[in-house]
Length: 119
Image: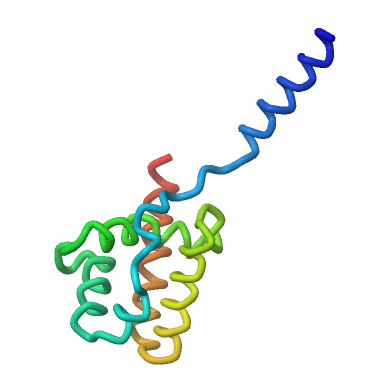
């Protein structure tokens, strides 16, 4: 019985180590289509991400903070809703504002280089 308990504990520890923690789902409720279809809101989120203007909402700041990693890792730590949000953003920008999409990609790469250099 002690051996069985030991095996169960080892499996539990391994599961915890292998499982990556997901991003908080606190802001999963945002209506991404409303943001993307509203020039003013979309520009606020874009400028927040690009760090050319302050983030005006906690949601914008949250997504700014996770977006580079989410894009680089194909949303490895995203909730299902966050994957939908990121997919919607990618689709919208690549179809409607490819020049701004290129800036997002460049910023994402720059952010990841900085993060990797700091580790």
